[in-house]
Amino acid sequence: MSSSILFIVVIAYFILLLSVAWYTSKNSTNESFFIGNRNSNWMLVSFGMIGTSLSGVTFVSVPGTVGTQAFAYFQVVVGYFIGYIIVAFVLLPLYYKMQLTSIYNYLLKRFGFTAYKTGSLFFIISRVLGATARLYLVINVLQIFILDEMQIPFWVTSLIILLMILLYTYEGGVKTIVFTDTLQTTFMIAGLLICIGFVMHAMNMNLPESLKQLSLNHFSHIWNTEIKSSGFFVKQIIGGAFITIGMTGLDQEMMQKNISVKKLKDSQKNMMTFSVIMVLVNLLFLFLGGILYIFAHANGIPAKGDDLFPTVALSHLPPFVSVVFIIALISALFPSADGALTALTSSFCIDILGIQRKNELSEKAKKKKRMIVHFTFAIIFFICVMIFKWIDDKSIIGIILTVAGYTYGPLLGLFSFGILTKRQLRENIWTTLICIAAPILCYLLSIEASKWLGGYQIGIELLLINGIITFIGLLIISTKKRKS
Image (cartoon, rainbow, N blue to C red; front, side):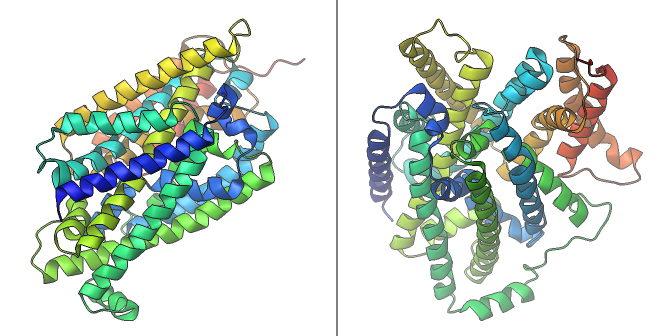
């Protein structure tokens, strides 16, 4: 299909988002930007969070993993579901009880400024790296299949897309994102279902026949029972649960939307509804991956991994599917990027600059600072996307899970130490040093684990190991709670 037509589709889609943003950001304030005035509809938040959680990585990378791992990724998804239950019934009640705008204020109230600033900085590092990796993947697909033909450089593409995101999040923040994410999730899931239908139709297969072919090609295998393998199902489930606790429950972006809902019970309904839909949607992506590989093999298409879905959708299916794929892909792109940009702005303003604690600042002055921070993070996103382009790794989902293991581990250790013990941390640099040392030790362990542990390979459980090391370090430097 013509690159020009697909480009026009992208521009039209952005104009639609900008229109929604203009409508929802009327009379916006700092409060509506940060937490939507705590008045968001839980059903909209739940549905919109699917787009944020899945992102372009799930849309492109998960189908691509089926070729080498079959349905093994579903082991991680089972862990995600368990993690969502823990977030809904352990962390959300805590956040609502303390009426938090930034979830890292918990660390301030529990341990003081050192732990608070440390936790906030680790979130900022985690979210910047994770969000820009996701952003790079989708921009790269758009570049290869649309914009290279139009001779538009990658850096120009990245800059324009970030300006688009900046424009529609600049004023409304969370209040706007709740609505735009709902719209984009609708397009993304519709695109997924339409693509599945067209691939099955192209091969003259109905659902039972498709399932039979997946089984015959050994694509539907889920459980890995090899104990020493990094893909062992127990590791994957436990690792997936803690990935969810870290990347959702201890992440300002994801929790910012949840705590924008007025009542705790509604927020919990949001989380559980979202988790069930997430499991089903991930299963659909794996199913799509299986039939894409069967289609590619039957038609002599050499593409695999992250390149498989874009290649088939844009070059080997009817033009209508190309349009649907592009709309669905950018619908997967924007929720993960816009939410991250807004959450990072909120966290930096509230946790690092402390603008809500500075009563001497007027609402206008606070808004000016917030807009400067928002723009600065957009520049940082651009720089990071260009670095990922330079690295040019073909397995972005692997990068994201690895980065999460290193950067969310200290957050897991800090929060779990606060919740599970009554001990205190002194206001000194040791808290920060332990949170830095834990990922370094994990890196050394991951390199030498096979040699030290008789062939054992560390996989997705890296985050849990990181959190445990952080917890033990904090326990060593902590003191008993003072009696009042």
